[in-house]
Length: 305
Ligand SMILES: [Zn+2]
Image (cartoon, rainbow, N blue to C red; front, side, top):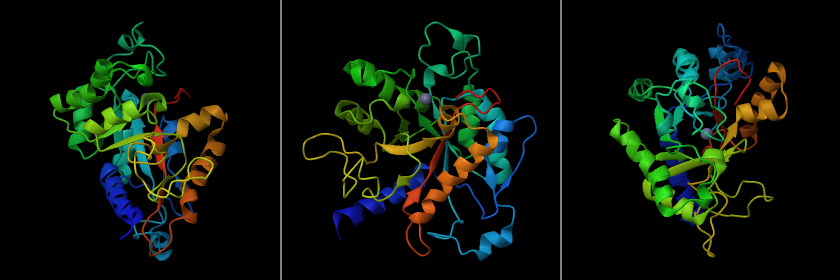
């Protein structure tokens, strides 16, 4: 068995566990379900209400659905609990929530503190530990998004890295939530050997951004980015490879909305385009190869990330 195949099997399992059950169904005739008072959510979630089209179109990969996607929520905003969780429940979706430990339980006012810098959610209410624990107990996955969501992980001292990376895992454990997954704030550190080494000591997988599809075989990324033929973390030179278990890529829905000034219709079209991107790679009867990991932040009508 070649190295690539071995790694592929591992990574397939990894992603299945990492994002267990986080399947977003998108039919060939997508229907948007509006949610009262939450335009942002209604434009974000598509599901399949036509069960006959779902079962008759054959599906792809392992027959989960026509298309699949994984749903992530970053930064621990209260709106994820109040607005997104009911929608996830309504459609039977599970997601992964990446939590910033020092932010948990902070009110909007507390989040406005001068100590919170370079954070898009400054002044925005956070989930409480009761909320986070409820998510965990209801089968959502909880991941770590550091202690303080700082920008400069590549410049941190050893003890600062220990605090932000290992400390945030311990923080979750102290609240009864074991985790094996980590997300880099600002995508910072995913290509830094020191940071990745620290992350690998405490976590099995780490997610960054920003790419529409995550490939389970590491030679399918654009040659512009990578000429890897397998998923090993370190290149022979000691540098970090482009595609590995500590550089899993997600696609930020709100980043695109803001960057390209999409209106609701344009955003929906872009969403469908991203989710449909897997069709080129996932073939009926073949193992899944491409999965969009869709990352959300604030789930409100603020228009902010
Ligand atoms: Zn973040």
